Image (tube, rainbow over all chains, first blue to last red):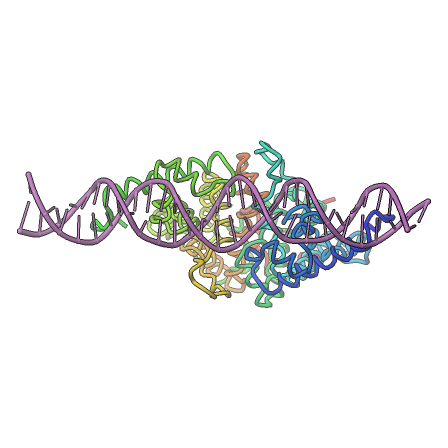
Length: 217
Length: 217
DNA sequence: TAGACAACTGGACCGGCGGTCAACTAAGCT
DNA sequence: AGCTTAGTTGACCGCCGGTCCAGTTGTCTA
């Protein structure tokens, strides 16, 4: 980022205009009914420019999401605890999930757009290539890596990698996204916290049966 | 189901041929690169027939999924414990989640197809209708309702509705789906079980901090 | 068996999409 | 001012989901 100067002034201006227009449209319409042409028109540029800058629909969405999540990434890497390094894994994970819910909540349709874009992903000119290795966007990569590492740090006996996918995946679900749009971010964060607390508290593998803990009802 | 006779013989034959062809294609290709024309051709019928029978892409996918999950639904409603009524909520939930993972695992691309179809959902002739109430397919409805009820039965203090969405949503995540395709269904079921056990075990709201339980590392 | 009718069928057709490209334009260097 | 080259553009392409109606065929009645 902040490269010497490989980008011309008008190009930079257009790139920002496109990003702005995209988030503008995203805040008003469902992502799957926003076409690339609409975005181009709203940004006041030609469609070709959009594709030249971002390569594809997914490229655009990823770029936008990355921009939005940049502050969070910095905070996690070098910021103060509990988000940044220094706090115990439990607290860091809770803080991180809270932060993610916040980011997602403030960027409602964006995750859904990412998911939708991922569906029609894959350059069409790359013939074959069926299998798709499945790297994922760098942003998702970072989020997943961080969560996974925190889980593993606290509970090496758990499958942190998979649990991180599960936690992150739940944010892509339509009903959850809709709830976020209704402003119930705190409700989601609360349940996620409960889930994490339980995950860290349970002795793993051992079902709750026979537990003397206060049984409800 | 098993209606008196509102469906002609050839219509029934074609419906099954289309369903068969769809699952056949679904098992070989990623859902988003299967077009309705391909399905029609594979089933040996015209494209119009497919749309006449199922209304839309999503209608097809829902019908297929419903067919696949019918046995499970019956087992839950009237079958023997622990899946059916009679067992305590914990065991029923674990059994149900195991069963769902199994169904999803055996129908790999189907959930993804549903998700993808849901993106472009909404009859185009229904002008306006922006907001979309968001009922969801009856299948998802049933799954969510069952999980939600079991959670609430065992732990009324938790947000069963939301937690059910989170649990179900995690199955739609791309990385999880990919893992299922690699045959790691048991790994997923195991982590889900751990998550549920923790959810039921934790006293809710209370973070794991200060817990004397064996802290790793 | 014959006739009639509705359900069903198929594929040409439509609007619109994501993505491409070659001709054009202008920013930045000297 | 003139040149180089990144940047821009919109017509264009192939394809897709979905529609439509003329033609076909199963089924019911007599």
